[in-house]
Amino acid sequence: QVQLVESGGGVVQPGGSLRLSCAASGLTFSNYGMHWVRQAPGKGLEWLAFIRFNENNRYYADSLKGRFTISRDNSKNTLYLEMNSLRAEDTAVYYCTKDQNQYRWTDDAFDIWGQGTMVTVSS
Amino acid sequence: EVVLTQSPGTLSLSPGERATLSCRASQSVSFLAWYQQKPGQSPRLLIFDASSRASGIPDRFSGSGSGADFTLSISRLEPEDFGVYYCQQYGGSRWTFGQGTKVELK
Image 1 (cartoon, chains in turn purple, red):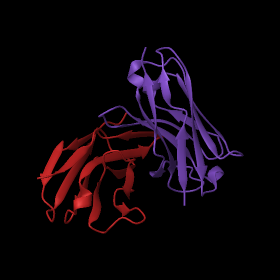
Image 2 (cartoon, chains in turn brown, yellow):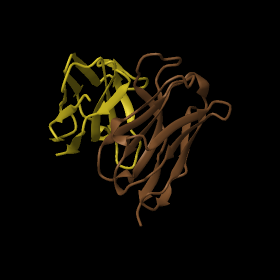
Image 3 (tube, each protein chain N blue to C red):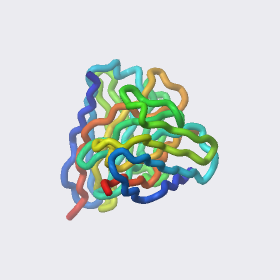
Image 4 (tube, rainbow over the protein chains, first blue to last red):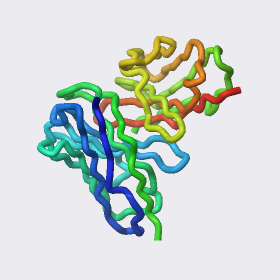
């Protein structure tokens, strides 16, 4: 079955950097747009970034102010999120999730989610 | 940015009762989805394109609405339906979520 497995979370100091990974299996990864979504402790869901199936388009939440970069390696079936200048308010569970439909050129809902990886920004 | 406001914040109901959740957008949206999240779990897609049920979702879940006003209905609550529900709009290359409605056991 389709599976998304995030990794790379941990504790990082304010101002530090971290790279998250999301390994996909059970699907043709290169056919799907992918997203990162986060959830701060006890809070709601926040969409962060999107990368189209062929990497032609990347979109980010305005709140990130250029600190995060989404990328993918279709040969490794892996999605990444590079996070820089981390702040305490970036503390959250980070989920990767996929577009519901293949080869989607318009926006789509998210049908499969990983289990999430926890990022804690603290000195 | 489109802001989604969900109401009520908390819904206290008993199994077998009907649940009606509201999601209002700050402007007309192209597409709307609903997700369910239980404690310690990842979100699960219930409804997409405002009224289409996702794969494997029971028919007691239904979505309706258009423009800026949407509703998720659960016809007869089952014990496994208690949790937090989020609406999400997608379109214009931005995705935003509502703040969530918690459906709790009365």
